[in-house]
Length: 151
Image (tube, rainbow, N blue to C red):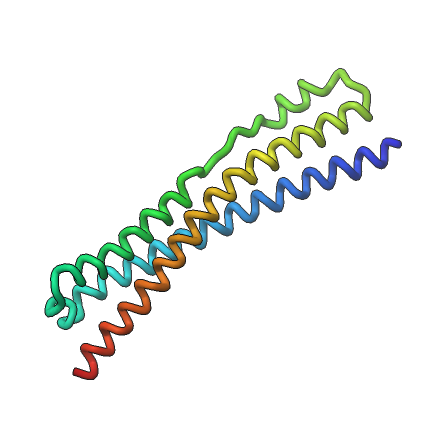
């Protein structure tokens, strides 16, 4: 019976750690989006054709990367989550027998995973919006560049 509980604990721990890795990957991708937007904003001022556009078009071309940066920063926002240290976990379950301890640890990992999943879904929403705006900004930047090069 104990081996079943240990498998359950290992599965819960693995799911939690995979979600933690997804968190890190999403943070890295959001940082890359911020860098891409910074490049787009900087390069807009270099293109002479940008200054010839109306103020509304200039505002639109600048606001897309700025909003994308804001979404990417929101994606980076929840950097930590409430997770007790190992010492607290051991002291909490030290008096229990092996089977109840393993079950409680599996429940703890499952709760952490569900809490982390809620945060991850929020981060993913912000990342998707930032990514869509980066694509739109890049397309508009390329169009403006072609207008400058072929006019």
